[in-house]
Length: 91
Image 1: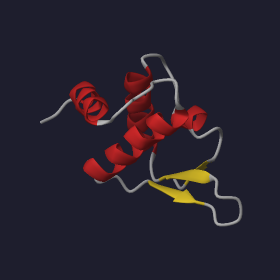
Image 2: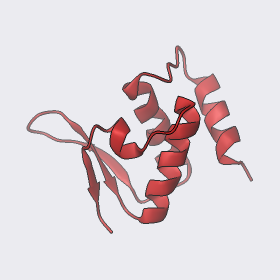
Image 3: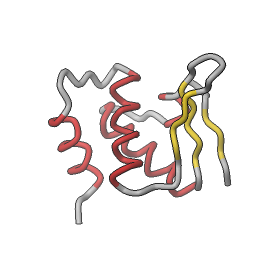
């Protein structure tokens, strides 16, 4: 079993030019986590303005994604901060 810390380390190492202060890099790590851990949460791009919106399926997934973002950012950050408030909670 892979720990969250190991997952984030491996994901960052596989990305070229990862910048922990770049929201797009953090979003990419979150997208990879959603796919790899088979979360029900989804990121969708709004057709009208092209804004990326994170649809969170559960409190557990929100907490795990925030922890992953924090590990990738090297300081505490929530998924809501990464997505600049463009988060829809479906729970």
